[in-house]
Amino acid sequence: YVRPFDFLSNDGERHDDFVLSPYQAYSYVGSQYFKAAPGMLEEGGMLHPSRDPLDIFPSLRRIISGNPDLDFLVVGSSDPEKSVVETHLYVRSLAKGVDPQFDNAINRFTNASRETRERKLYLMFQL
Image (cartoon, rainbow, N blue to C red; front, side, top):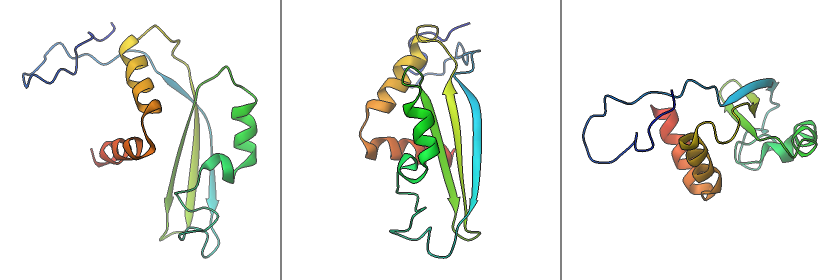
């Protein structure tokens, strides 16, 4: 069952017909975990969260640039108190067009400004 187009309408009413897509949009590829040396997670450090993971990890860049026909999702997080960094790679497994609402949502997200994407991710992690 694919979600109805207006499943997230803003009319303030409860929608009992809300159904999650039964399809998995992304499949797990792999993860890397790193123990950071002192200072690497600080502002300006090599593993600071503000840096693009593709700039930090050449192997990750090679995987993504070597497969231009695939859509990837890179998720990174860090714990400065434990000096740990983790990076996870997913590849889109849901064919485009199967769930048009998901296609629309992911396109809006990826085409949004960096500030908007970070704000949405921050809100998502708060939930």
